[in-house]
Image (cartoon, rainbow, N blue to C red; front, side, top):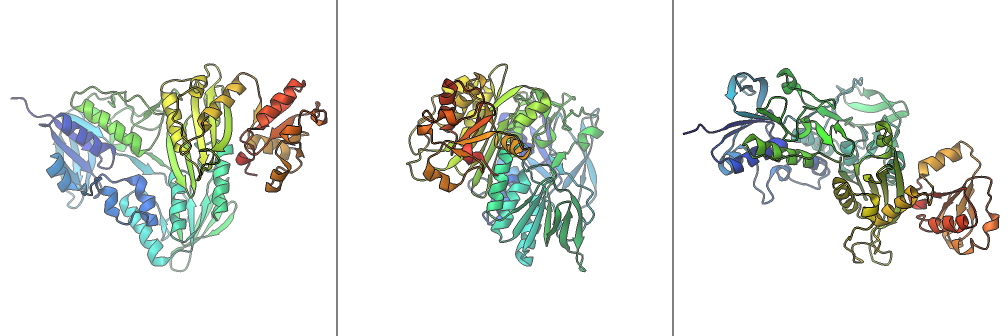
Length: 558
């Protein structure tokens, strides 16, 4: 009788437990062991900000099944028939002997675990900047459940009136809302020119302005120089290149990097993105060792390059694939599009594929279009505006990127777009998708289809567009251009861009002679839905100096 297959999994948070559970379902007789350095298993790390804010009251909810059963070692043993060694550190891999050396942290004793297949799911480590004062009390990071416990304890017991968050990435942004919900004033400090660097500047600035509207101090292009403390050794303020910010609590959230040291010491190939190199079967350079989750390098099919993407959704899918292949059930993972979603106060934010900035860095010629529209008909109660930016490869017209922000239902459009990108669809095909329509859900011409059509018009040379950031920079540089507002006179009371000339769309044909031909004319309205016919009216009169402000005033944050 054949010996049972021995599978050892290193990492017990997301990808590791998923791989072990999948292997168990496919190989009932396998001997499966999970090695986890921490105490807590299989928790929802993305839920930590909501636990801190109090939206999730019980920390055990982050570690429970949908029916409320806690995923602890006893659960894995009795329900999954999986042995869990928590509070146990993986020290070294002996590839020749096919053994994993581990150290039991409570006792310091070591042992060697034999394996036929090893799955590495060691996740990430937080990036630590050499900031003077980082060792002060109440300067925290957020990686584990225990970190969230500490953060929540400080917020409750010390009632910190001022909190500084260093880093404007996903965790930093989500924590901004969580801390604000706790009643503290928040300043977020980002070294780059805008928060959420996965977005283009014109989209990220919209998010920043929304944050400022709800009272958050946003400091971009700002470097933290030091963290200062009081006489008791507790943080008192953060000194930045943009000025000082008072603080009783500081969260350092400047990013994470793949935890690959165990793999590196074992001589496994590390990819150019810094993650463990794997093939489409999640197999490393050693055929008996697999890697999944945040520690593993991803294949980004929109970029055509390897990438690093630490997301729980991806980790779970990769864990399933690794678990399948570890027991001989062939399954491929096709790669990622970088799909990301987050909620920031009343706004929804999402993106997938390439931004214009990323495409430029990769040398991929693209065309983009930004549109603003309600997520459902304006007459239906609860309709809210969203701004979408679509990106297409010029040569093929394939949709290769999307970004969306706003109060309305953004993520539905992101999901449709990433499905289209996965299928390699062009913007022409996206524009004709038979999307579901009813007034409670969308307009008859959904905002995604509207965006695809605007992008088609740009690709066909029917209209030239300018983003809010591009126009702002040109105005700041003193360029001599005409701003043409084609709204109604009553709408002008809602505001507009200073220096604009108001000619309502209905009057434009009779007043076309007022438009200059010797300088650029940028046309806009509330969403630029009327700017497009205005461009066509003037083009029919021989004007070739026309541009449309993409997204109109809805996408104008200045």
